[in-house]
Length: 67
Length: 269
Image 1 (cartoon, one colour):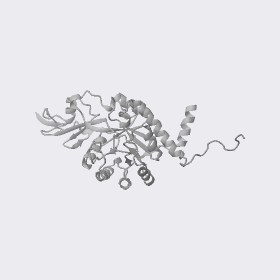
Image 2: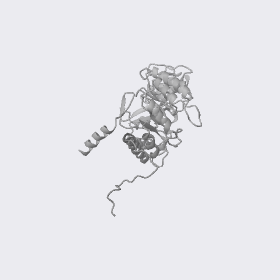
Image 3: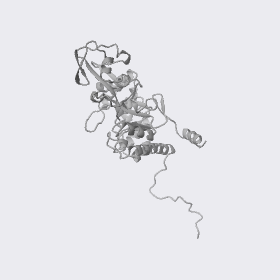
Image 4: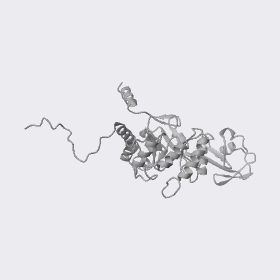
């Protein structure tokens, strides 16, 4: 089990989980969000290749209404 | 038949707005914040005739993952979405948000905001210039929100901004155009489009702003905070068109004294 941080909250995931797997766990559509891993953007075509590690800090953002 | 004649005469009356090589028929750009619902947002955008709308980049609320994405309502094939860096207080932070917005894959455009003060939301123009240079170098089409200072505007243009967006008055204040002189000065000296961003409160503000000869207006709160946003959207569409047409038509000179509109000759004895 890995302890990571997702959008400022602690989150536990299984060893070997990828970023794409995390999005699936969270019920998110990878086409509608953008992911930062330790302040580096994870390109959309790399979501399924990048494996999470203990202590990783993830930010998942999307578009909301704004001026 | 009637419609085609109208469309033809309009295209002869005015050129479209061109920013960064992209053409817009509407000179009104809408923000999408603070509406009552996604549905109201879309209805207001449609009623306004705007083709370009701004959006913000924020954390997904993981406690509400069934919340529908704004993109389900604002179809990127129908509207051109312009990600902003609202709420950023440093060049680094704004650059980070701009990169996240671009990664969404819709375009490499950004409405660049670097705020310098929480109370007034006035821009930190020093940081704005730094962020503009960096993002232009990274291939972004940068539309910076700035104050109405000519020197800053010229520096932003020199830094490669695709348009310069001076405020009419502080964001969300609804004070209207406070310094028409400065905005006209910017317009007369810049080659890139000048889009007034922020401060418009009601239709007359939008009309007066367009009468200064600027290329467009970006607004949000004037609609979202009105009692009937969709109706205000229509009012703004008409006001922007009216102000633009009045500018192109060229207003009559002001006089101190009356001049009769009817002939003075031919009166009865």
